[in-house]
Amino acid sequence: MATVLVVSVGGSCAPVVNGCREFKPDFVYFLCSGGKSASTVVVDGDGNPCGDPRTVSCPECGKSIPLGDPRGPSITRQLGLSADRYEKVLVEDPDDLEALFRALDEIDRRVRKRFAGQKVEVIANYTGGTKTMSVALALMAVLRRWDLSLSKGPRKDLIKVKSGDIPVRVDQSPFVIDYHLERMRELLNRYDYRAADEVLGGLIRRSPQTAREELLRLRRLCRAFSLWDAFDHSGAYEILEGSGGSSLEPYIKAAARLSQPEKSGAAYEAVVDLLYNAERRAEQGRYDDAVGRLYRALELLAQLRLRMPYGLDTGRIDVSALPEGLRAKYASRQEGGRPLQLALVQAYLLLDDLEDGLGRLFRREEKRLLNALQKRNHSIMAHGQNPIGAAGYQEVLETVRPFVKEALAQVGFNSACRQLPRAELCGLVEERGGGAGAGHR
Image (cartoon, rainbow, N blue to C red; front, side, top):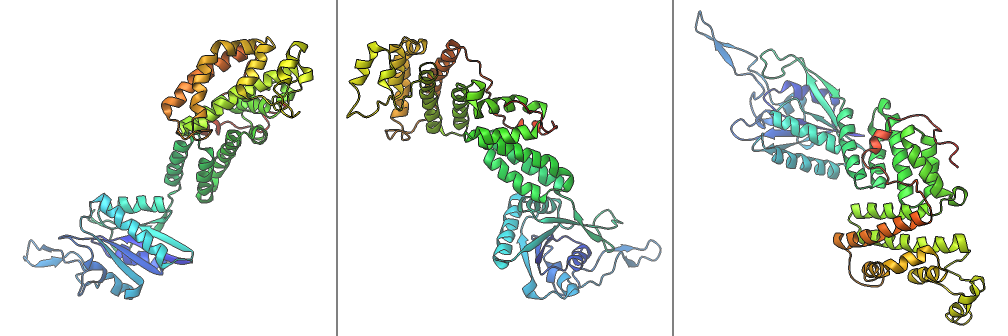
């Protein structure tokens, strides 16, 4: 594995020299300041740029007394570092955070290009340079997953670290964890469980052992809700039930009902779940997908109502199973002896013909529902070319949701389903206790 040292250079050479000797890098990038107080000269300047030229005047004899050793060849001369093993990266204003970030980003690109195809360990030593240089280097190390190093030593004059310093690794895991958790919270707030899972996967590989248990539990929950979001309710239930915890109980119960509705008598739960799924798609700005789910919720509601009390399948209507007064009407719609299939509106009209309350409700709201559904039919995800925006989605939602709510109340169905958690999912990790959801099935 190649080792690269990125070091910010200030007025003291010893920490840089000691850092190079400690880590024995294959290549060094020196981040230097420009301007009047340029630090680039101490890297490879002539003479004694690393010497201490400061003096004080003796109050008794008036002679100048050196504060330090005026002799001090450049850093690269002290290290015997050849020109092909280092680069200087100069930033004119060492307090320009944006310029420093650009310079460090360029260093990152050069490292990847120079060591393409190799495993590389990058160590960032932020002891020297201005405070802004140190801040920029430390932040870039967190962002780019570099190791952090600080040279610890005496500061006799409270100005800079001098000789006798020891370069040590800095544990950046608390900052790394918090940074990635904040990214994950942003993803969870838009219900992007799969992306949050990927962020956690990378974080777990870099986190200390003490933090991994909670992170692993959080990742399991992200996977469970990612499966739920993709309508794999059985897979979600298995993970949630195994994770346990009192805060998860409502989700475990809902997932159990969704995964085996025939056992729990909760077939209509899938309709409610589709409404919540539509809200999640809208939160992501995917309004065409959201309206498609609202359409499917409305369609599924009619299909379930025909199937459960009447034993009718909209994909294959058995005309002989209809009341005698309706058989001729529906038999006339069959083509070439093929089974009769009913689309959404036709399914509700059949319920109305059966004098079912849900059919009558549809008749009452038919005009509003059909107007709303036209947006779906004209969308690029159905039969048209028009994308659906936020306003179009909201119009369809405000039409479909109250209809579904009244319809479910009419059939006496109480849903256990709820919207999936967003960033509050992190709080559910604190709850422990495997198997808390046992027995729901």
